[in-house]
Length: 395
Image (tube, rainbow, N blue to C red):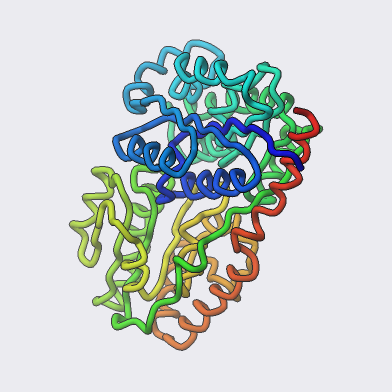
């Protein structure tokens, strides 16, 4: 296949790969540049993103960043409530970024948009492009609407419907629509039939996330994730207030550590609960995975695949997760991880493993073997070649 000049649009600078979306975007551009020329345009949310852009340039990626104050943009987007436009598009709309894209239309053979908010910059531009849905945002807002009381439920329901209309517009304009799980592809094909789609699974760095030596603590739970992301906040708050007390009643020495950057005030307050620690940003989450005996994934709202689950399994940790947290992982509950949704079932599953270290270790080993066989990046990215063939044919 001849080399293709690809314009890659990302909602965040795809480096360093220290959170879910950045892990995916970094792996994508690193794979694309093996045979093609890649130029990156992305929003910079903070100084770390700007430094990440500098790092990409040193690695040979032509990289353009547009500063984005997301909190301010959310406030400025509120008038869109009185229009038919999704609030999300107001937050991520940018004439400056659009101008940067338009400057490169003659240079580029094709484009790749990661996250639906970036697709708006490519619709109708006449360039063959791929829409990679980091998650199906309309369905996420549908879940939010079902979990919140009025008036938030009404606002979230509106966002779901306006985003669905927008996603239909995107899907009809692309060469292909990419999803990270078959579940999301199924939802897409049901709601937006007749548009080409495929699954490009996330992977995990098996060399980086290695099983650790036997644990010195017998009862230490861990959760990892960006801690200003609503599903993570909701899941941890519910777990600490509803599930963790049942565990501590049986095992008073049990600890729970919440690991991740940008903890909200609500998350920070959880550190006042006995046995709970909140770390904030850490340089290397492997330290905390190595100290823990069980990884918990108590999410009540989720779509896509949870990298936190794959990373814990790759580290040889037994995982106890909800349906929402594990539905993107194509493993077998009971063999590769434990599935528990109700408060009582979560507590029972965790206590069962804490009381049986031999089974906990065996579950962790089975989880490691599962990700070795199914979530190696070299294998999960193979379908990308077919996408590039399509782009090349239309460029």
